[in-house]
Length: 119
Image (tube, rainbow, N blue to C red; front, side, top):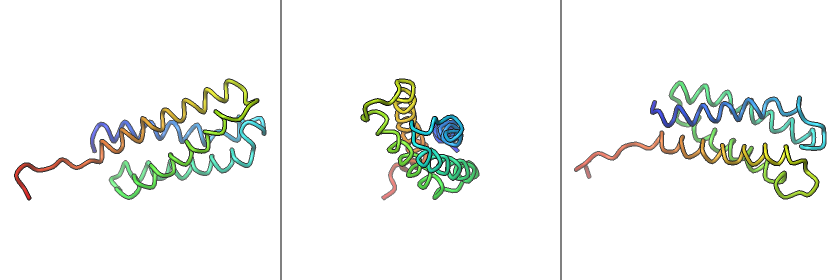
C-alpha cells in the first residue's frame, strides 16, 4: 500500500468518525436529525470500507470514494442556505475540502505505474 493511499484512508477515517458522531452533536436543525442519521450511516459504512481497503480490497476503495463524495455533497446546503450558524458552515466547508484532499490522495495512491517499453 502506498503512502498516499494510506494517508487518504486516514483522512477518510477522520471524516467518517466525525460523520458517525453527527447525531450526537446536532441541534436537530443544523443539520436536520434525519440527515444527521443518514450521514452517520454513511460514516459507519465508510469505516467498514476503510478496513477492507486497508486490507487490500481494491473495490472497497471505489465504493469509499463514492460514499465520501455523497457525504461531501450532503454538506453543500450548509454553505448556501441562509441562517446556518457560522460554526456549522465552517465545519461543512472543512469536510468538503478534506474530502477533496482524501479523494486526491486515494486516487494517486491507487494509480498503477506504467511499465516502460511494454505495449
